[in-house]
Length: 105
Length: 194
Image 1 (cartoon, rainbow over the protein chains, first blue to last red):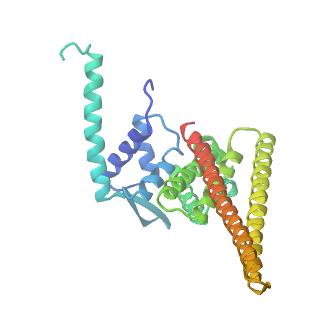
Image 2 (cartoon, one colour):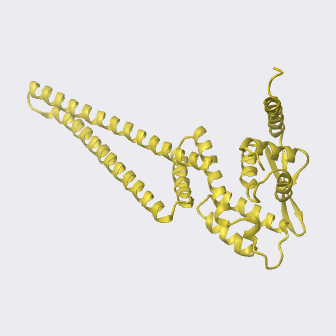
Image 3 (cartoon, chains in turn red, orange):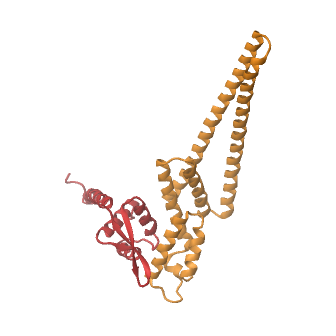
């Protein structure tokens, strides 16, 4: 990976994945790992923080005789995701402009 | 390292965290390991990471959370928590243990000395204040109006000096606590960037 992922962008990615459907720690990590180079243990503190700040919520569901903790998005989380998406759009376009030479502005 | 050994090691690394935070992390990793489908004799820490490194992440996240909380709710309890987590972070930092211990000893000695100085200052202030009050009261049983007046004046002056000393001591103590919190936050914040 040439480009580094910053903390807010990682937050945004995690919220985005959860917004697409409730999921648990392992598949969530797998999905993010398909795109970004993160370690297996990167997401736990992120999930915990998002949960503490009320953007994600959890519920438990039995699976093969054990427990599985699912994460789902809250109303605040959806708002935050919209904010992140808008910010990303602006940032992405600005970078694209710079990469294109920024001559058309 | 199998699942039981891994979780035991992680629990040991997290033993000074609040029980709620520790249990949450252990539950998460217990589930995570089950989902990773390890082979019978596979070493979990190779794919998942060493318990020590995982614990470091969890502890610094916990510390940041406490700092955020401290900004909204003040109080001795949350201050103590910040100081405690700072010590944990220093201990779990890559600095070699002897240096960490030396640093902690120096910090503790400094904090202890300043605390003792402040306490003695506070105690003297209270005693001076008390002496002033007693002197003021006793002045009433002195013979003669002039002597009474002089005794009263001296008593009130001493009491005022005591009160002033007490105020200064409390001010210094508050300043000292603020300084400690500031230093702790700086250390926690630094770990955040690393």
